[in-house]
Image (tube, rainbow, N blue to C red; front, side, top):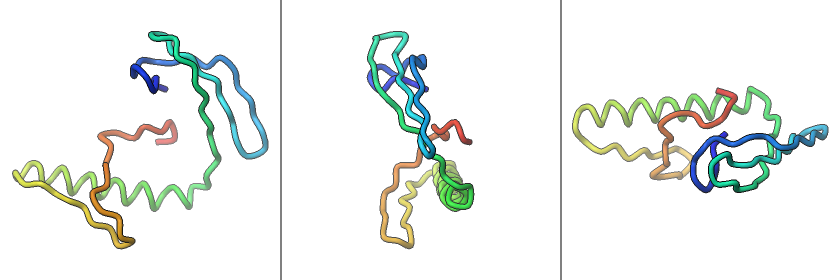
Length: 93
């Protein structure tokens, strides 16, 4: 995982697990920042629709950029101007 301050690699200092969550204490190798992450177990049937929607919008945005115009995604549930990341940031993908 990358540091939230300087975007460098981090190391896991400590891990605390419970029945549903995993908490990790992380420290940045570069700037020394300390922070905690919370990993929640999400069933795959909930992740797949979100990832499918994300990948379709990313594909549409990429094709629009190649053709030379801006693509502004609009979703059925009312969301607009979603920030589509360049690559998945989760270790699950």
